[in-house]
Length: 241
Image: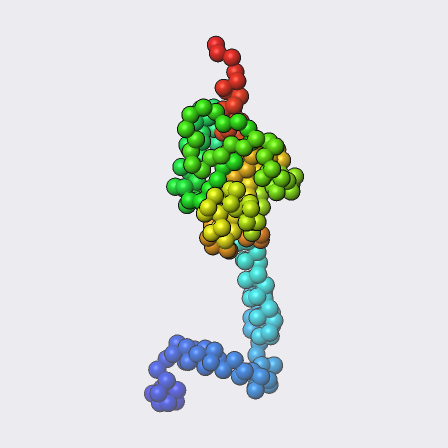
């Protein structure tokens, strides 16, 4: 029996595990034994020379950094590819929507907002005179000179969606009696500078639509609705064959 075994140490493998566990639980060991740290020499990963423990740690960190940078570059590449695919799908969807009958387009807009996005408080305000027939509850036609539209002039001027709080008068105009219950709203101009009207989404949650949130999705939604509605107008105006 060797002296090591006589001391109750079963194997070198167990020794290494014990040493590793000790160092992990005593990270200040080399602070207290700096002479030991100074004498430690490790083989270089890319040669026969030896380096200090600190130098080896720097090498390990550099390799980890290089690996992380590679993973980040791959994630960015995938993200850019996904963005490009989403944009192509968006253009493709817009082309398809331009041929829908107007009634079908409006019905699909209402159902999609409610069923796909849980937008149960939605108002679609279109500028112009109402066509004949029954008008869905969430849809409203207003003349271009309607005084209520003046409060949305800055929204139409920007041509971009806006999220956050809205005035009491705006909420009542958009959502009726339920408007005062809306803690936050998303206002989406339709057409160039709101020439077609606007879409309003409301929520009782004050933080549901906040000024800091991204509006890219809302802008794309506006594109789809605008194409669906303007495409049907063109279709209706075309002479019969």
